[in-house]
Image 1 (tube, rainbow, N blue to C red):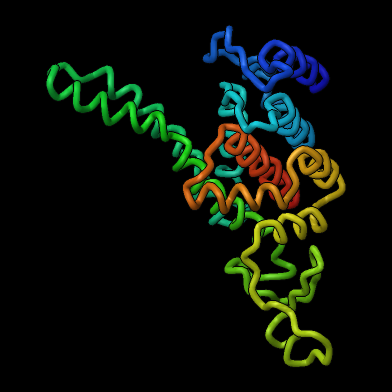
Image 2 (cartoon, rainbow, N blue to C red):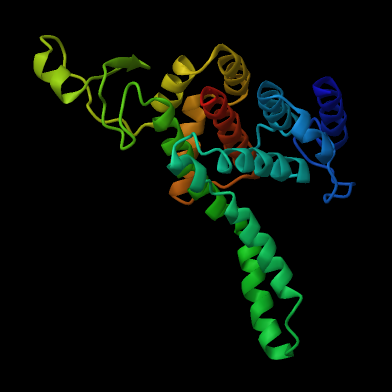
Length: 266
């Protein structure tokens, strides 16, 4: 089944993306292109991680111009539902997934059709049009915050959820040590707080299971942890909110969520 998804994704890519980086949309965006909704419950967690990678790969465009398809949103929603129903994982992970920002945008679109007063409707249309144009801002901001919090919780053997280091590690030539470790160290001191998403994702890849590490290696071959970190800074400072950023961000969150769910199994 996963091979069929991979084949459909490749067919989609050939039909939509052109060599010059442009995109051709000639399909119904309300229908899935890669998987059938009814098939999702039969996928294993490893298959679902692979599906996240496939959806990310099919939308890869160096110009960060892509299309968020129904496949993407349904996949993200399905993984989020799995996490929300699992009482064995950290409650913060369960309840803070920012996917609601997409739902809010769809709700605004529906609200636009319900106004009957012409004057009020004209004002509402102008506002809603602006919100639709900027709809990815909220999704991106909340998504990066969630990705950082999720990554910290995956790395709990090395740090607290607030980023305070509890065990020494070194990533990207950067040394991190706990306050106690710094007090005892006779060599160069390390940082006792981590807030760099590039370093966090590098540490995450080191900690996760072999299956997740293999998927992350393919994700990061397209978009490195350093590049994702740069997107975070650019997006939070208002200079970038490309659809490719959204696709990579939420697919990466889903892949990591599936790792957390698998590790929680008795």
